[in-house]
Image 1 (cartoon, rainbow, N blue to C red):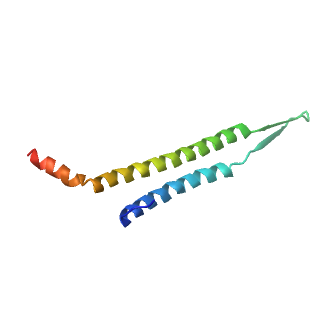
Image 2: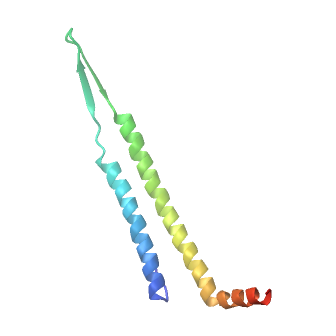
Image 3: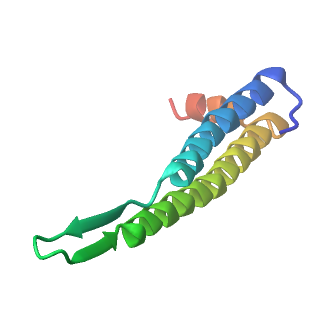
Length: 105
């Protein structure tokens, strides 16, 4: 994110890197899940097989949805913080707030 002040840019960059690391971990966890096939052999010689493919697919989709939602939240949070900081800086709201609070005393 482009900012006039180095500290603000460092904060935005650090926030983005930390949250994108969490997103990467979620996507990595979803990609590393494996489907397990269970084969049961009975005493009469018959075999039955089952797998946990639906549960694994559901978990993968939930992790991916959480990652996408987190990316959207990251973008929103950083944009809102940048807008608020810009308003405070450009319109000199801090001195105005101090003056308004001192006026009431």
